[in-house]
Length: 431
Image 1 (spheres, helix red, strand yellow):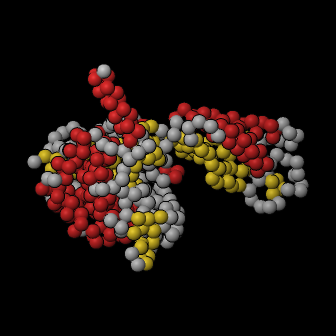
Image 2 (cartoon, rainbow, N blue to C red; image 1 turned 90 degrees about the vertical axis):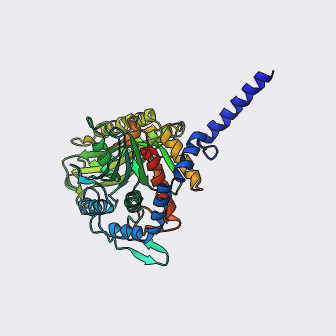
């Protein structure tokens, strides 16, 4: 009976641990990782580095403002990239370069060959050319498009490098400090995809800094697939060519068909979403358009369900066009489906050392860790089985992706300290 009771207690504790791990309660790290982080944080050189982060806080905020006021619209990040490169060089990176697609990469060599750890933030914003990115200060609040997402992350990467170098900390692993391109929208995580393309498999651990409060541990990748559906016809005069196949009419029928099918599918099962985000085409109110188009986004926590709603979308589009063309209109509409986005699903296991360390570091800084799912730069390494997470940029902010985006440096240094300690734990410091 005594043995059975002990086994029962162990089983119960295991269930409690599982509940903590999968978000029913605040996740807790295994004791060995908690001890590891506590020991690391107590080392003299690390304490020095943590103090440096406090000491350079005004400098870090200046870096944030400088970078924010350099526009970085989608696919046009080069000016900000050049400035970020110079900042990495000034912070003491041993080698800094801009790769073929525009990623800025700063290398800090380790004492041993082999492991490579990345600390990343993305250079691009969602705002088009011409957007006013001047930072406005109102009290303790900074207002500017992109001030948080993800320019704050870039400033944190620079501050982390400065602190490690000032404290003269040596690590066994190489650390790459990266400002990546193409994270937002139609960039489709292109910068990170390039880093992990076939033949480039030398990254062993990936930490991104992006949205969210201190304590965020995004260990799951939210998959998405995006299309531009293009409907084309001959076009003509609204009166003189009346009865001719109209791409707008076909598009409307396609939206109705897809919405009905997709709504039914997403009403049950693991969360899956769909959205028609943009529609365009036509030349004038009295012209039958020769082209009509729409852009569609579909997401799911499940790779299988993402594939299934993708099939529903394609079938709905073709069915609607076929039925429209058979409705008695003159001539016909043609359909082209162009994939404009493909972000994978996946998960870094909670038991993985990187996730465990992130949970332990969060607790170390009295932050409440929260396991999340999202579409971030970490999605690419996650999908390839490489340990990867995205952590929050901290502070206090809001209106991301809006012209009135804002950020307050409310205990912002703590998020930098968390990023640094997590990076050092992955890279393993030497004496």
